[in-house]
Length: 472
Image 1 (cartoon, rainbow, N blue to C red):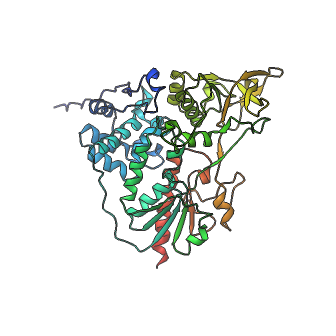
Image 2: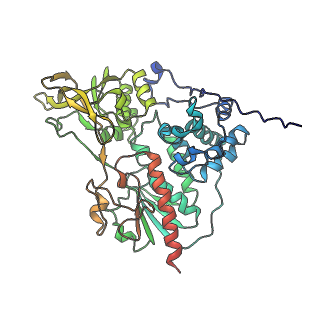
Image 3: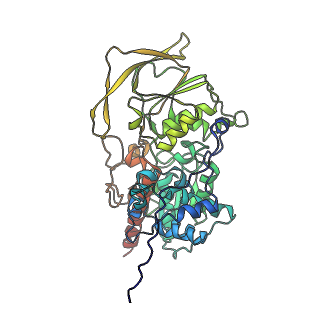
């Protein structure tokens, strides 16, 4: 008798769309643009997963989430189990589901994506995190017995929060020192409300606090207390102080009034609630014509913020073509839908002000693309004699950031890279000093949230090994 062959699962090549606010509605508010999956939509999308025996998506995740595992829980309707599965390796699922570049990581290697569109892994992660929040109760896992070891963390950004989560679960006493008055790092001051609601950041931080982690704000490590002073009280220190030093183009006129770094512009609006002035006492200038220089996610965030603050025209000025934009495709798409004008192959060379020192014009050059450079993108080349001027009454520079220099300057013996970052061993995140670890933007320069969290997981594992060996 011939055994019947099992039917293979039919491939569904199309991912389920994420509902979002209409552009003409969302440009008038700071509410979240993407609205999330409903339960039926999430289940339909989860059913597209092939449950591969050797899932490449897991390898594409910097924190090693069991992706097929949590997706299977959605298919089975056991959403609580799905949340627990994610939190085995990721303390910030609601955040990662919103802002991580899944298209360049887990979704990029999804097998379904070979013959169709990849499974919407990030959206499903967000679905589970939002489902848990909707239940009104966050489940706290069982902690390991107390070890008696104490760890200090400088910075309550993605890297620091991840280290705190992992070490608390392992039984260590963890204290976070945060320079700002709210926790979250770039999540709270850099990413706008319409992309990542701050209530979600606060909720994720409270989850980590519920594990017994102590958090002190308005505490500037390197100034309030040095790392060496902390080491008199703690067994180990992790540095996750971020990349808070903005880059400028070093062209004439950058010191004019009305010229901002993206750090300052977004911090005023996000952390200091400038978009709610006068309810919050942070006035934000609302110019008519705004230029945002840059092509990354921070540039998109700045441009879309300017739209919501009521600018008549917002221009994104970028020296390469659209194909080379480093921003996520969905963020560029959202910006275009909201009316942002893309001035591509355009390089600012001078900012021109009026008699009172306020920005009034930007002088630019046309560019063309040459051969690929070290980044793999085609190098922009100036078109000689193509100078032209455009009127603007505000300019936001969003071309990148360097690591915050305060802690490296006040901690003797730390090896520092040419770009100002702390040098660490990639496999442990340990610095040149054996009781100090570092990760995230203070090591990498401005990078992604999930890469900072990946650093945090590596550091936490290494710190745990160090602490457990210390008493032997």
